[in-house]
Image 1 (spheres, each protein chain N blue to C red):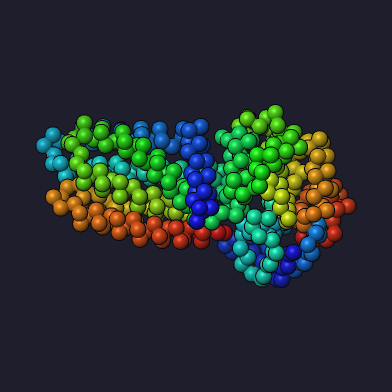
Image 2: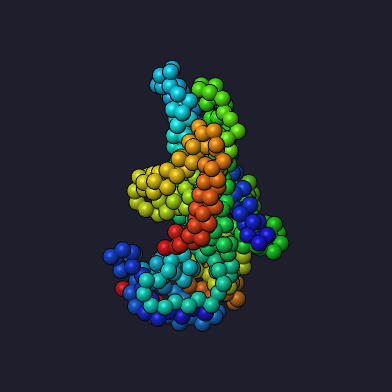
Length: 194
Length: 213
């Protein structure tokens, strides 16, 4: 599913990622670990197609409409409601049976009662759950998750544990986490940055 | 093709909804253009020619547009929301077209107030001026939107947009003023239409490269 050879990325003179080799089979779960600033986020943004490499080669065998990305920011419009945000992305991704799918995700992530509230009124944990709903809305086959447990309370983290365990059966994952033990049992591959 | 325009409609509707909720762009554009016209009204000597007044109108329009363009990607810049749009499987030029249409809508609203105000303070507005303004709006928004996307990626974004935009707006001002003051406006209107066509195509084709990091 993902193959990288000598993958590198510079920002101006600063080399953030250098010489990364990677093979991840379809259905695999890659756990990326490393200290802050080691290039984890850059690698995930490259895989998601948000950055282009400045060195090496990267091949991702998943079309853009089948990639789900969760980054440090929730990527939701604060002035729009939870429902409007998911509807916007649902339309752009051409999600079949959009309304039913959005309703199901809002229910599953405990946001149904807050569906008509603007995202700017949400707590950080609620925003993270909305962001997860956005990332899963189009039923992606490749999930790129950057610190998915950040800002989640214990209930939200347990919910995400269940989601990952279920999705693990039908999706490929690339995940970074400051708490790698939480997802270590799911991992098939590991990449540790120094 | 219908999918492309459906994406444009979804994105433009989102921008209009955001503006209706936040009311951050149109009110400031309205305030600026009216203030500018009032200042020009009192600053220009009574015996000033119509040409000078029309020149002031175009200065007000260009800077009002600049104000709107400066805010075009504010929502997307904050918290990297542009990533959400770039990840979506829509053609990236659809983002440009939707943003161009929404900025155009905001500018037209400002002008719906500014042109009658100009007629009140200075002189009547003829059809050639209205046509010139309409054609200039298209060029301003098409070019300005791609430059706004470029500027938003930089650090000195407030400085960068005027530096990039104003030189490219000079032909628009020349065409617009020419159409407003001459007895033969067709040549200038044709020039504006040609500018619009050329720069809209360039902006449409280059947007993907502008937003790709």
